[in-house]
Length: 149
Image (cartoon, rainbow, N blue to C red; front, side, top):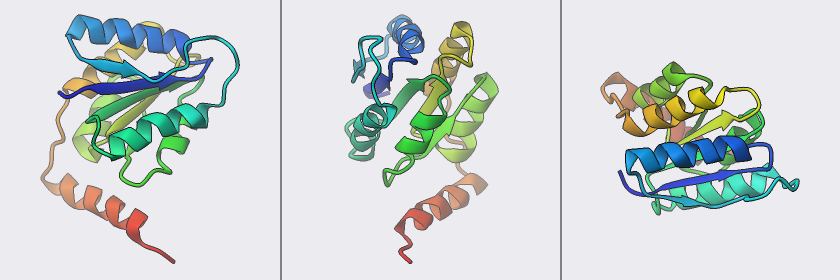
């Protein structure tokens, strides 16, 4: 696993700190792209920081945290090449990787228990893409973002 990029907004800060501890325990190298305070910030700025660098190949995967995870997921998915999934438990993190080859996972620090957030991060980073029939589907997603109307 190459370096993982992580970021949060102010609401996601507790979840991001949980993820950092989990990554340290796993021995996974990561870069924290902010925020580092509880002062209100705009989540799209942090989602973009991670998503652009993942899309550019600077990191294999990213993890984003806001209050619900929804805003981060929506913003990250605006960047071509990103397949950001919202995960609320270990199973959704696993399926995001196995079936969708998600390269970013978004979680909600206000909606998901901290222990579950740690499980989501661990599962997201240790689950491989299942390929097979899922490859065709992921390729169709890529075609959608390349289609210009």
